[in-house]
Length: 242
Image (cartoon, rainbow, N blue to C red; front, top):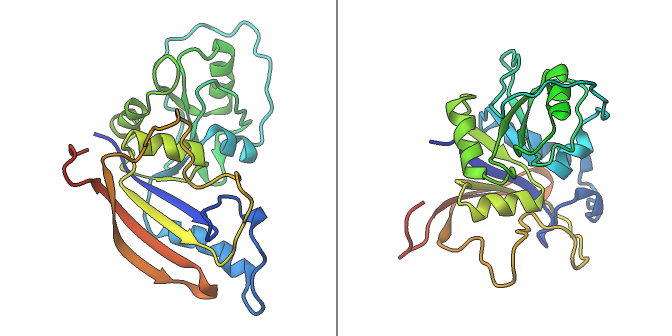
């Protein structure tokens, strides 16, 4: 048992990830309207939270590292802080590098997915901040196990996977994506090598999407010329089911 996971991303027409690099909106098209589509569409899914990788979360978290003297040794078990009925902001942070300084990102309660090797001092910092956490194995790379805990321990039924590209790729490789929600902005990046919405960090020749197929379930043109595509992820013909 795990949450239903929707990879919800905005991209340029060349598949790039960072809107700061996109070409400008055309004359008469509101850049503000284009930016607003992402959250507007996200709200339609009724998700219990959103999930990002360590780099993305580090860009939006506001805390600083603190020295916790004589932090007690604690078992590597899930910790559910005071959620207060809020949705979750989930960070995949195996090494415990993100510092929060509070228990929320916006209106959402922070939940860190860690490796068991993180220090007791870091766990003490999270508890002081009111942050929830769980462990994804010794190295923090057991994504299927982490997703199972989100469902069974934290009651999460639906999540929006919101990048970056490497964490999206890892979820694809583990067959943890049930649906893609892709907003294609009327813009282009153009530079070779800039991050894409799926950037699996694997060996040459690996195929993270092997055994999976995409079925178009929706296509809608939004104000300003942004196109919203929805694809269900299913087992490819002749392959084993997820």
